[in-house]
Image (tube, rainbow, N blue to C red; front, side):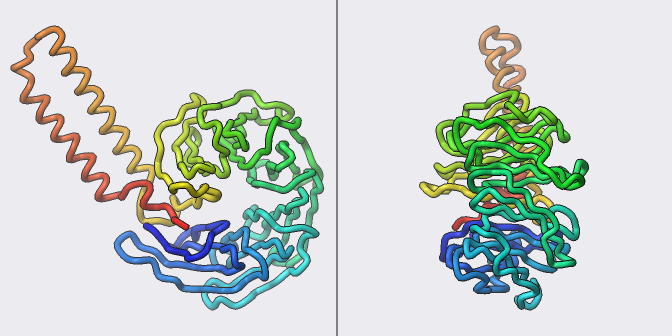
Length: 346
């Protein structure tokens, strides 16, 4: 699926239960599209939300509203059905709003260019918590719902942990060698993975945030601008060189490239696994299974060639297996689509 947004997109978000995708553009516009696997995406809304670029966008209230943030320091809530403004905070931050994230059904968090994180009660339409923890811009935010803790990365090269129950900064890592740009929680909450400007993945053990416990350097030297958690063992990374990779965590390895956006950097990845009709994990399962079958067949073939053991007797069976695996992979591709068909190309 490809949508021509006509302008540079800074952020995207997918509806939690419907085939809708929202995009925040460089000119301050908010676009909303309806998409289907077998039809051309249709633009439903085009709202000029901010006087400057729309850096962050998130669905809130179960997908009934869209929240956007901008360098003009404002945060705005827009009704998904009508496009009308529900609420607007013109001076939500003292600096440019860079990130937005859903916390609970009634709260969201925002991060700005001066390292400040704010928590907002969307029902009361007020700020409930403020954390002045970083010395540079907030690059990414994630939320540990079971512990009620916000984890954030920053251009100052640190990872912070903010405790919402105690309303205080619980921990902050030592300064790394370069900027931290992205963060995800993995391994059922036991590991925190941060992407850096030099392309190194830093792995922290939960509760031990002062220094990383492991480093993965195979994606270096291209910066890891964004990450998307696929499951507890795999993430999808987007880099400045335009590559989108599937990466395994513990064991650390690049499993395979998924897509490439030419010379343009990949700055945001949207989670479509819960709302799109295409099942990405199922496609990967089929692909890996067929790849495994082919590897086994090639191994058997090589063994038979080396030892000349009943080679002619089994050739017909091997040929049948080759053809079966080929058509299985083809059927999986046509049914579930290729992974890069789910990308939004800006």
